Image (cartoon, rainbow, N blue to C red; front, side):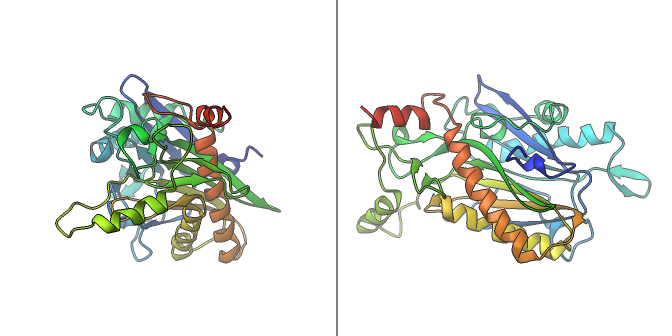
Length: 326
């Protein structure tokens, strides 16, 4: 086991990024998916093809899940994923015309790198060509421009990134992948160690994001803009046999992983979203699958921050640990 979403048979992950502009995309190729669902819980989502995943709608599952930086501009890169599947002659058969279904979501990372640079179709296509079983983590793919810790000024933020993890029980496997670009602080759900978030002014420790949020209440005025925020987006895959409504329930339960590792989570300015796909091979109870999804998601969030190095002028977890040890 790789402790990765690709521990689920048939799932492949591909990244593409431009380190000069701090933009990237990540694609999950899941053409063997049987059912899928999504749960959008943040207040400011940037998404694509989520309605088709609703339990009452016809398409059982997408052929790929696409994650990107570049805010809403980054959604254009999903066209390259569609071209990849078209070239492979894979898609939903609509009157003898194959239409690949690519669902996805984006993060806001335009304060990092080049604000006028966005992932495009070429980058989306390249991510598909790069897809495999090994999943690099940290400052890669859609996590290239990710930041965490928005309770202070811009220079108090830290580098976010991408992580993956899995949980298994017998033949049942549940994997998660996440792009951590959150407002709050991030902790390890197992050890409780605070991994990253809003730096103090000395940049040798972290502020308590929840307490900093509460302080803003004293100066609150209805005419002021709300808290600035970012977005954490995740995907879950499992080899369980689940109906489309139950796949949606797994996506909903996986959000517990956000709450275990991020505080605060699901603020109104964030587009927190989780997609779930099933490959339909192992009988299981929905409660078991959902609990394992939350576990894998929480650990994937922690791994994303542990693997995110300092980049683009923002401190990574390893350098923070060194400063705190001085």
